[in-house]
Image 1 (cartoon, rainbow, N blue to C red):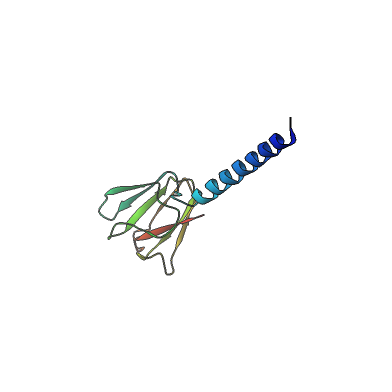
Image 2 (cartoon, helix red, strand yellow):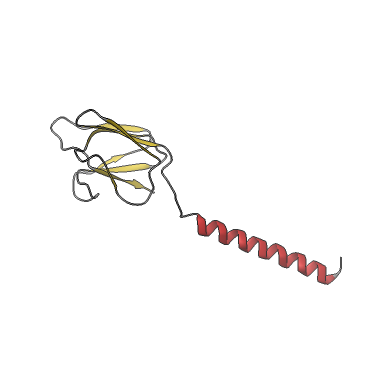
Length: 115
């Protein structure tokens, strides 16, 4: 193989590898979700499903809050008593687990993911 053809081939492979790396790195943070459902029951016994929520940010639950939460996602979540994912009284809920509030406890009003 001539020297020029060999250099072009190596340069093409290097350029292709760099382009692929940039493409993967640029898209890896876009649209990441906690694959699976977060299913919760409100104080009025309505069952609500949030399918594959984004891993970033705070996710509000129904205005009246939730008394039971099932984490069917592939990541852990943190439940909060406030609608903005702040304050004391949080509950760590591992993936594939369910947590039920005691009758006298305040309802959960939001959650965030652990990633």
